[in-house]
Length: 237
Length: 181
Image (cartoon, rainbow over all chains, first blue to last red; front, side, top):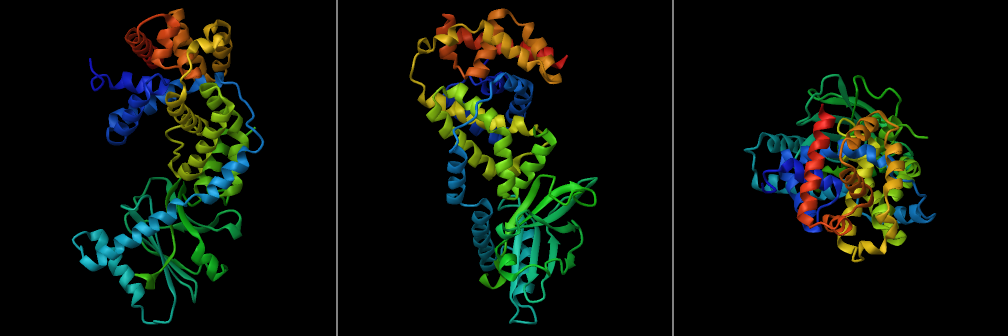
């Protein structure tokens, strides 16, 4: 029996930790494209997890957390990187007009409408909220002058019994602040950003979490972040 | 004590880049994760370095955490284990003979199983582990907790690495059958 036949044995040994470095590297790469292997690994992680209770806890050195925090400051935030990526993509969409994709077309139309809005002096911001650069889910646009925010669903899928809730995240705000539940079919429009400063609106990260129906019961995000993005000026395009 | 539900919520906030929540996650879990990296790497300097990388990864990847797939502590422990195992496979040049305490694991193993049995899932796993032959059970627990490779187990048990592989796969398959029943 070779490794490809015994996927479950390979997954088990990967989780147990007995593979060589090259085998581990190969399994880590294969699980990205082989769903059966990935699922088997997750099952084994679950089966053997109670053994973690056997590991004695040890308090790490006192300066470790400060070292971690300094690494965070030096790290590039993921959402920022994907905005750059997205800008490139949108430029490509606009210049080569690959409008064959309905998704691309809808984005270009929306962005075009914002850019060539009747009041040319108005500053408009847009953020594409996405899980990765290839799958935008919501488009948020803000008119900075009147603070009106419009959230347009692009490709978000409804989950039964759940609601999408939008959050604004900025250092100056402390905790993430809710911008309300957003609809995955109809655009949601309102002056929810009325109380925020323009620089905060522009510099914030916007994230969507999956919450119980009707929104987070506690006022803080409780579910996983499903989409996130940052604002870019519409005139940048 | 932070409950699993609280920890899930905190990870949700970390995904939103909430620094305070990140500090809370660190406070609640760093001793467990350092225990894991130290046990596998055995060198405090390496274990500390890996622990830092683990939490940077938690910061970057908290949005990937899905409570439907894993409990938060299992998710965190898995990141720590995988990172520590990759590192130890790169860096552990010493012979297992340098670690005499590993050669006498019987008592440690009993303590380990007692700790495992505290939870409901743990009772089932401990019960299924106890159905393996003594040597095989010890091998599985040693491999998981100490991060031993097949070669290191081969040295310890005086068997060729291929035999160890066969033993491990059979023991794991038996364990899976027992847990599934």
